[in-house]
Image 1 (cartoon, rainbow, N blue to C red):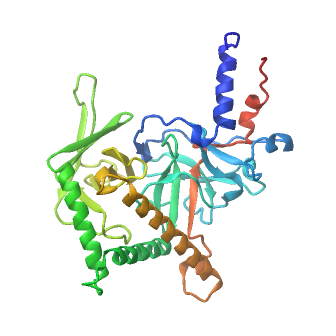
Image 2: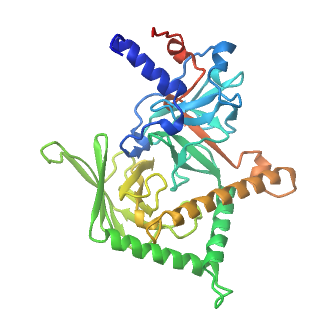
Image 3: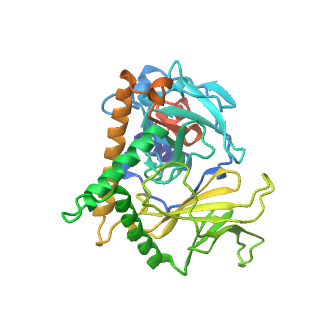
Length: 399
């Protein structure tokens, strides 16, 4: 290294990070909040070209080209899983993206904060999905959405979309699973609603023991967010001297629960906060939904996982409560829950896919739409055969 220039050292680092480094070897930087509206860049596309030789150098063992996180190099998806978006009625623009194939396209969508982003569709990804979901401000009618983050660096990469029918199926199977686990010999006919209520009561008690009378805060860029359990949610900017030139309420606690956007299991601990500061953009008062949950992204640390703004001045905050992951000092309960959710999702996707070839009266069948799919923000990922990496591949270093 003594004879290597700084430029060559940097190039080698980029080459290893983007083109060769396996996911398991990637470093895990300090976790930061993922705030959907905070994306400030206009996602862009580059006119890509490559030859077969370069293409072959950037495939996995089965010949599949990898799509990686631009920030750390972790595997996010495979290019073979690219799909065209079935509904682009809410897109404001489209453009060709040859790196994705002859029919490759990026579609530009605008979020509630008026940030434009170019999205590419994929059948699936290997990123982590947020457990909180909503139908507000969805880009695709009849679909709810949840954030997806890089499994290594936790950067926000896009969204996973579930059709309403798929979500209803998953919820129904999950409730059946909860009922089966909580039924006892003395109560073989226990109602599913009672089972869900019992599970929710258990979780509420855990959250109260952890947070009652306390507040939890986190900072993402310019803004900080503070959740005071059962009291108020605030958004503020704090200067180095501790002063807060910008500080407003995102809502005060509302006793009566509101109806959820989509049917869910009914076991999440959720609090609603309304009547916050007046929102100039739409004339409404700021409001927030806070979900307290076991976070698979951070199961051991009490923290705010994400702050989202699905519609103007209406927020969703996910708070990680480690004690909800298990009650015995290990992660067995959390692992079992995640495994169950994955199993229910796979079963429901299979059932709904089968409905395409049956006479079932299904929106999925009638509209010929996918049960689920992923959209990746193209500015946050890169295909390994991209021409953007040509200069790295052409570098040669002397021993």
